Each structure stands twice: as C-alpha cells, then as structure tokens.
Length: 60
Image 1 (cartoon, rainbow, N blue to C red):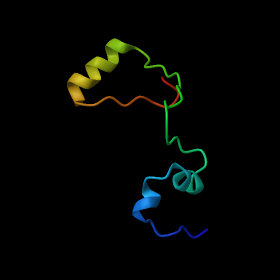
Image 2 (cartoon, rainbow, N blue to C red):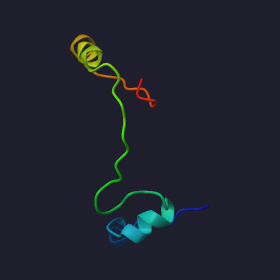
Image 3 (cartoon, rainbow, N blue to C red):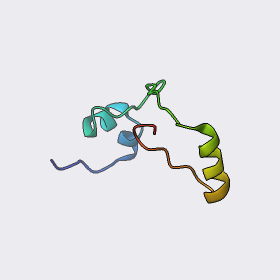
Image 4 (cartoon, rainbow, N blue to C red):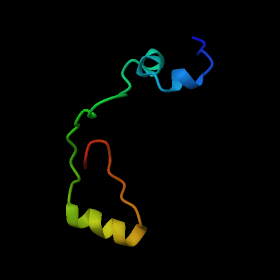
C-alpha cells in the first residue's frame, strides 16, 4: 500500500492518520492499559543505579 504524500492540511486531519493506521489513537483521552511494575523498591533501585527503568511487557 503506497502512502499519499503528506500535505500540511493532511497532517492536521485525524482522518488522514486513521487511514494510515486505523488503530492509532489520534484524539481524546488515550485508552488506559493497566500495567504492573513488579517490586517498586527494586525498580527504584534500578533507576538510581542505571538511570532508567526497564519494565517488561508482562509487568514482571
């Protein structure tokens, strides 16, 4: 599928972005996806030691 060239008016059109990716969240509040962080104390230690936190998709 070839994508049309991006014009300024298309860039501000939610319909344009939805035509490229129908599941893309464009307007309003994003859907809420619950996620777990596992052991929060351990995550804070990771943050302090490494400078970032890596949360696996399964929340473990």
